[in-house]
Amino acid sequence: IFAGLGLDPILNMFTWISQIGTLGVIGMMGITSLSVIVFFSKQGGGSPLSTKILPTIAGLIMAALFVYIFINYGDLTGTTGGNLSWLLPSLIPAAGVIGFLLAQRLKSADPARFAKMGTSLAE
Image 1 (cartoon, rainbow, N blue to C red):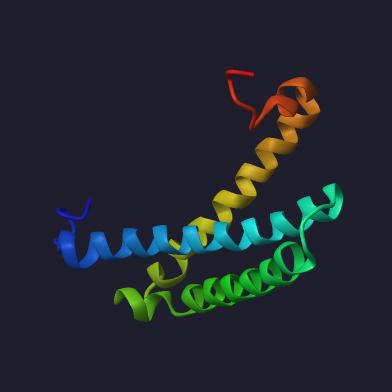
Image 2: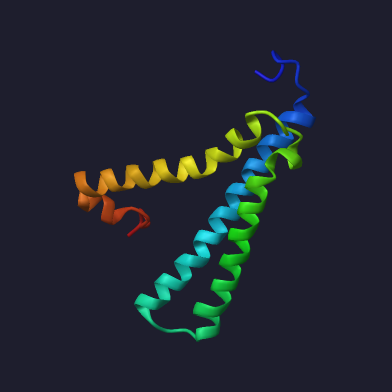
C-alpha cells in the first residue's frame, strides 16, 4: 500500500507504525499500574508506597503521556492535517474496546474457559 501510494517506507511507514507501537506500550503500562493497585487492594500485602503510591504516580504519568502523544500524533509523525493524525492512534483504544467486548462475550458464553484465560497451560 505504501509503495502504491508513493510513500517512503522509512519516513512514513516505519515512523507511523513505531509510534503506534509506542503508544500501545505506554497505554499498557498505564493499565498495568492500575492493575497493581487493584490486585493489592484485593489481596493485601506489600507496603502502601509500593502498592498504591508509586503505581498511582506511574499510572498518572503514563496516562498523561498517552493523551499527549495521542493529541500530538500528527506532529510526531508528520501526518498533520489529515485523517491519519487521529485515525492511526485511534486504533489503540479501538483494539482495547474490541478486546474487552470479546472477553465479556466469552465470559457469558463459556465462563469456565474465561476463568482459565491467562493461566499457564502447564497447570
